[in-house]
Image 1: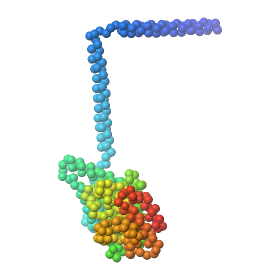
Image 2: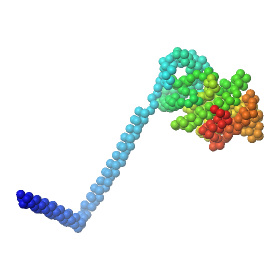
Image 3: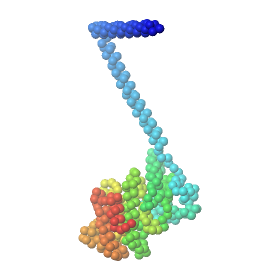
Image 4: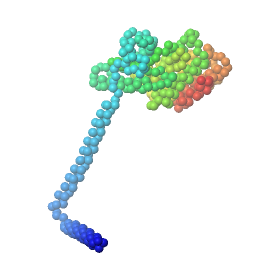
Length: 401
């Protein structure tokens, strides 16, 4: 049995050897044939009539390849553009009609009917009017109706421009509605009409900082230094939230007392954040709160908001409006900031303070230091002004909050 297995194993080995030998012979034969063919072709002189034909064929092949590559690239780019436009069309914000509500306390139908009725006018500005409205559920709201934006002549170009502009405002309003800070006015809803927007906020019975300061000047209201400092700290905290917490960063663009609302505890809340950059009919020149670079090179940054805050701080300290003729006479045609800088350099900062808030020596020292902070905020060069993040500790260290 073992002998038989040895015979079979030997037979298999021989068979495999023969197979490998046969394959090796075939391989050598093929290589030899290829070498002979190559030698024959290389040794044969090219036919004179075939050389141009080979060149033409080669040229056609190259041109065909180039044409195919270019055509493929063009088709790929066109396809990518078509897909990109389609995705952009799907992602773009749809134009919404009627009330867009962000608060559970407001019913869209109730809001729509309330806006259609006669409302109490609270005030007006170059970019809109303010109303007070009562809802059926007893909630009192403040409504700001922005002036018409134009682009309504009916042509296709202006219609497209109008829709794009409305969509931009709608996106900005949706961003503002998502903000949450105790020193910012919360946007509760907005209503897009044919050529205007109505913004809905919580009604603040105390009114704006401008209203409060007017009552102070008329001796109808007393605001202590503690309250004024609380207002200043709340404003700069709201700015810090806009400048350093929000992504992307939000600039106010139109910070002034009329856009600072005060609640019952005189806690400030910034209103109309970021809206000014979308309103072409806004007139900042007459406000006296805009930074010099806004008029010199039309550039606006977070330091421009800081300049506006410096003017507000100066108003809280002096009790005077920036448009008061007093500054033109006392500072030889200058501004509130120039006058504060002059009295601060002369060591007479105490003389600049509102007489109604002068009291204890400790408070006077705090107010004199606040004058220096206001002067730094009102620097002509933006680089010389502190950031809102730096101003918060500077002001809070004047008093304990």
